Every structure is written in C-alpha cells, then in structure tokens.
Image (spheres, rainbow, N blue to C red):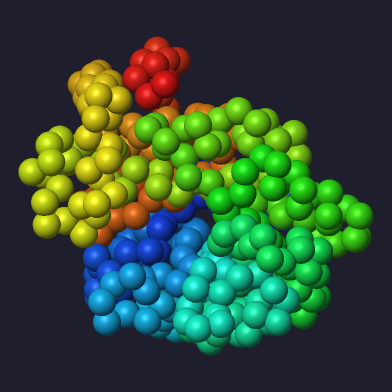
Length: 316
C-alpha cells in the first residue's frame, strides 16, 4: 500500500483514515478493538477522533472515543510509532470548556493525552472556527505544544477559503507555525463547501486534506434507498436529507459503476474521493468487520475516467 504525504507535516498516511466517532456509540469497546486490529493488520495507520466524541450519546460525557483508543493502544497490539492519531479541540466539553483560547487548549490537550494514554498527539486540529479568539493566540498555543513534544503537527476543520487564508496570513506575520492540514466535509453529494476556492488554496499551499462525512453518514454505502430504510437508525436524521432527486441520481450512478467493476457503492464513493484533486485521504467509519472490508478494498480500487465523469455529473 502506498502511503500519501500529508501536506508539509512530515507525516505519511495510508489512503483511508478510520473514523473513530463511532467508538462508544455505534461500536462498543470489544467491537472497536476488533475493527482497529483488522484495520492496522491490513496496513492502514491513521485514526481520526475528537475530544467531544461521543458526547451526543445519552450517558456519554465526551472523551469516550479517545478513551477506547487509549485502552486499545495500551494493549500493545500495534506499536505506538506505527499509529497516527488525529484528534481535535474546540467543541464544547462542558461549561467554560470550548473554543480555541490558549488557556483552554493547554487544558484540553492534557485531557486528551490522558484519555489516549500517550505522550503525544500526531495531528491536533482546531475543530471549529472560533471568532472570539485571534488566530495568533491559537497558533501560539500550538507552537508551545510542538516545542514541548506534545503534538507533532497542526491543522483545522471546517474553515472556508477566506478563514484558512486569514490563518496563513496571521501565522506569517507572527512567525508562528501555520495549519498544514484541513479536514472539510466532502463527499459525492456535499461538494460545494470544498470544491473551488478552498480546494485551490489547499493545492497552492500544499495543505493535506482528510475529508469527513466521506460516505455522507452512510448514505453512499447504498443501504438507504427510502425513508423507511433510515427509521430507527442512529443516523436517521442525518441520512434522510440525502434522499432527494440528487441523492437518487448518485445512487444510480454508483449502482452503474458497481455493475461494471464488481465493487460496492461505499468502495466506489471512497475511490472517487481518492482521485479528487487536493484530497490526501478520506475518513470513513465501519461498525462491523464486513463494513470494514469496503474501506480496505477502496484503497486498492482505481476508477476509470469514464466512471469518474459519470459520478461527477450525478453529484454536480
């Protein structure tokens, strides 16, 4: 498997990143361990999580995903230096615990390190824009953490092209490290937020791009075809929005490519991302070993120009 350079971070990652938002939510600890074991046995090396995962689940407090990853790491099945851990800061973790102020980042990183049972985070991301905190303050906090060896590289999630450019300008003026990775929402259905100015900027500045919602909350797996298919599912509210004319066109295109290639829709949707300009690797989750096979297979699937054109047109 060919690793891909993640922008200017000095980190190389496998073509698919495992989405850890499911740990402690739709995958219990035993299942999570089995999924991670198989993922790394297949040659992949990167897990994406966040301090807030999965606070939205009744009974969870946030930090649940990081704790499960930490206990898995502690088993020693995979050496720490073979694991790339991506986590995020900024989402609300309780009263007064959110945002990108330097004082809060200093607290939050220690909490993440404790939960992950590690002495460093490979890639630390600002989860959301924080209009109340100057970029210089946030980047200064990250610079200190890099000097202390607590984080290796930094990035951001959910910034638009202007915000990302503003962060670069602030870093340059203050002599601080810039964001070298972006995590945008991007998939066959949701394209407008990344394609265009933001993708152009990432290519120009050699920014690593790891996409989230790469399978549109599971919609692009093809298992949700009608409203009835979503009822009672953990992602019911998120998936139902895709069941419109555009969504059905995309499913039809995925079905056509599946018939031609023998690949599954989820594999095709991820392979489409892997051929898109500026994308380093998509993030995708699996809650069963069977679903995980689709992630593994996607890394080895190369779509033809004809298939790419068909999919591009369906999701335009």
